[in-house]
Image (cartoon, rainbow, N blue to C red; front, side, top):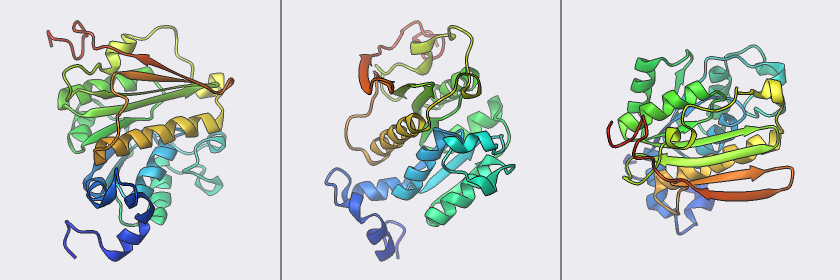
Length: 254
C-alpha cells in the first residue's frame, strides 16, 4: 500500500470522521501526514493526545519531565493507578500505542531548554500548549513565532477555562505575548487552587479539535479570538484579540 493512500484498516478505523464532508479522504490524509508537539501530558495534554491519536494524526511528539502522582488521576485521564511513579511520557506512550498503533510517538522526557525547545518545534507542523506555568507558555510561544508555526493554547483552573489559537503564519494574528504580556498576578497551580476534571477535559478536547482543523484544513480556527469558559454557570464568552504591533515577541520591530 502506498504511503499516500489509506489502507482498508485505516478506512474502517477513521470511517466516521471520513464521512464528514469537511474532512473526507483528503483531510484524513493530511491528518496522517501531520506532526504535532504536545507540551504537557497532564490534564489538558491527556484529552489532546488521546483524541489526536484516535483521529489518526501521524506523529505525536510528547513533552513532559514529570512523573505520575496519585493526585493527578482525578483529571489526567491518560494515566491510571498502575502508572503512579512512572514518567508521564512513558505512561502516555503506552496508552496511546494501545489506542492506535499507527501513530508514531516521540518522547521528550527532560525539561525543554531554549535549544531543545527550538529543535522540538522545528520538527513538527503544529504545537499545542498544555502546560501549567507562564514561563513555559512564554517560551513555547516565542519558539513558535520564530519557527512560523501555529500554537493552540489552553488553560484551566478552578472552574474557569480559556482557549485560543495563535498562528504566526498570518500577518494579523496575535501571539500569546500580545494577549498576556509579562503576566499579571502570581500564578496559581491546580495543586494550590484546585480544578474540576471535566473542565480540563473540555478545554483539552477543544484544543484537539482546533488542531484537527488546522492540520486537515477545515472550519474556522480560533485565530484572533479568545474563548472564556465559566464552568460554574455553564457559560461561554468570546473576545476578539488583536495583534500588538509593539509586541516584544512578534511585533514589527522584531
